[in-house]
Length: 203
Image (tube, rainbow, N blue to C red; front, side, top):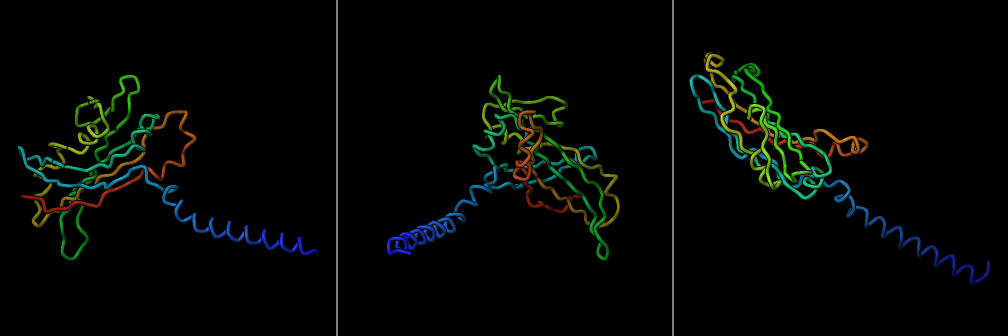
């Protein structure tokens, strides 16, 4: 092997070493972007309470739903998102697991209407009606407010003891257009749940 060939080989080894070190160092910085959650921000139940009207317990909830450009873009591309509220009422027992009294889920859907350029909220509490909003933030504010949802009647909590109410909010991907059905790798990125928000049921 000539001196020139040896120098060329050493130079090639140096180039490959630098390239490998750069690649190894760059990869960790790329992972956050690759695994970025489309639902930026914090999802949390900020407050919740019940009041009793005519023997019916009505739930009121305030939830902070995250908003981002990625969410708005996905909605404009034809993805719908489901905003669900889970509520559980249980009777606390000292030596046994809590007794489940009720477990309910309220499902609401957010989509984008491209013709009117408005965000549409479908809420079963609106008796089949739907509301539209000019901005995503306005739609999320409406989704984050639940008023007078009947969850329980007084005859269900006649047994002695303490009763616990727990509320949790979640967001998940809903319907896809036919053109987007192939993009199923999105599915895991559009799932998020809040922590349970719990308090004692007033009686």
